[in-house]
Image 1 (tube, rainbow, N blue to C red):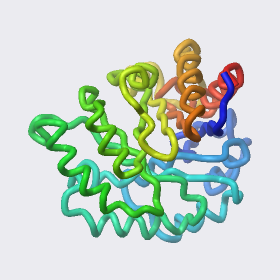
Image 2: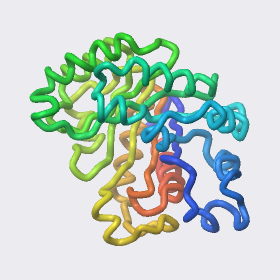
Image 3: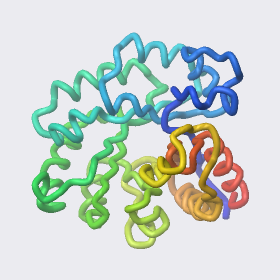
Image 4: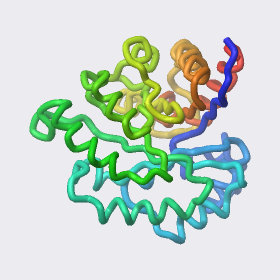
Length: 268
């Protein structure tokens, strides 16, 4: 199956002391982790921005420590997605965007990751879309957005159409309680924005019963990764593709990402 657009693989974050030795050379200082990471991967999803907007100095440091071709996807702060749930958050949004824009051409996109919404938060998908639609309408055109939801029954044409109206990518996830990317692709037109975005998240609770040290693969997900590689290849026929691997997926993000890159070559 020939690809017509690039498939880029990266990790969810880089600030892991557990990677010292198996990934970062022994003796690497934590302040040099990103520089070392960028020698092996050309993009990263920044998880820390989910917890707070980074300082301007911090973002400038990310830019300075990475080569020109390197790209970042930043997670939108949880105060917007989880606490205020997109309401009355223009101040927080603008503060975050001011910091994010310091990455310049290295800012690939922003990931709006939502949690599972119960009936008290949003009684239905329509109620959520009534908030999401105007939020995306006000989102700036110069910062591409990708949207992840964790209510599996909300993965419908209505949700996809909302994203498509605003040229926002639909985030596909490989996660324990969500349908697989391949299953979503069979029932839905997932091409809603200028790129495809996939996150390999796994089962956090299950893997933490095995390990909380993230320096080696502890769950063999080879068969599942083959299906992910095939899905990414299918997506790449239409748009550029990004995929990010979390440590919690199999135990060690960089090794899983490398395995996925090798598997993709089999379908190219």
